[in-house]
Length: 181
Length: 77
Image (cartoon, rainbow over all chains, first blue to last red; front, side):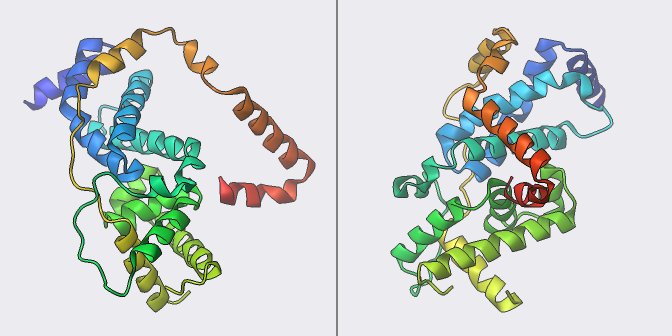
């Protein structure tokens, strides 16, 4: 199995489209799931997944076979998702966009009203995208910082810093609206 | 912001944006990707809006004229 996988990766590196399709079929669900955590909209996640694999194909010659394809694909997908967030920044300011299509069930704190949740989501949408991605992955999705750092191509310390900045800006924005978290 | 504040804002954020449920694409994405792969590579450059190019040039010019703005620009990028 490892030999077969290695052969596919070698052929992908040489630009073989069949090998690329094999890798796409193997990893598309994982990449889609990862992207969905960042963009939080299934329709957008599909577009970003296509964009990510297109970038992966363009970068085939730069792939290092000693690295994990999954981790490499995840890094590229994270940057594609980040670009999507940047280009859709203004759209997310509308209240209707703040409601996610497929949020997981959560036990709500009765002290936190729907109004506060909505304002928090909107305020979060106003944060710089690179801070938002770090906070989404590390705080909302509670993924290991090392995994987040690898996906963003930065150090664990830099992830912590981005999360801290995101939370500080979010708190400031909410305080300006009269909400004290 | 102390640790207590940080914990409270984290809890509020999780309330406002719950973790996403695992999901799969609603369709096979390969045909879309294949069509894109077969499109001319030059099309990629043309899809960058002129406004983006103008904005990038503006930022470079601003950084050249006022280097003190570079950290501020980097912070908000």
